[in-house]
Amino acid sequence: MEPRKSYPSDISREQFERIRPLLESVRKRTKPRTVDLHEVFNAVLYLLKAAASGACFPQGFPTGSRCMRTSPNGARRARTG
Image (cartoon, rainbow, N blue to C red; front, side):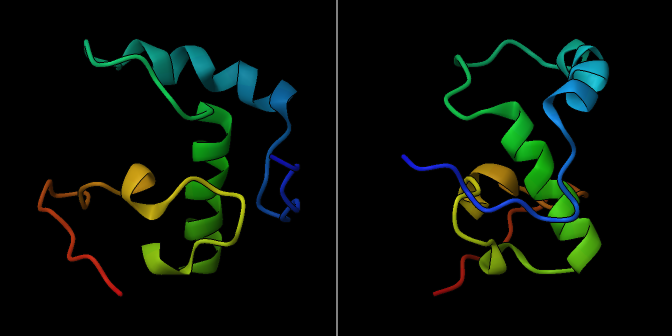
């Protein structure tokens, strides 16, 4: 898989490593992760910056279903298209 285009909302791996322990500390026992947590975090930052819906993910980011399986209140989001 070729590297994806970078976006202004992206943070570097070095910056991400400073917050990784915080993200990992809240992880419950689940299946092993199959996506890069750094990429998922960058996708969330992109959504926050662009105020885009899950259906508007740019190419190269994990799919919307992986990043936004539930809304902030825990309700399942409707799938589009």
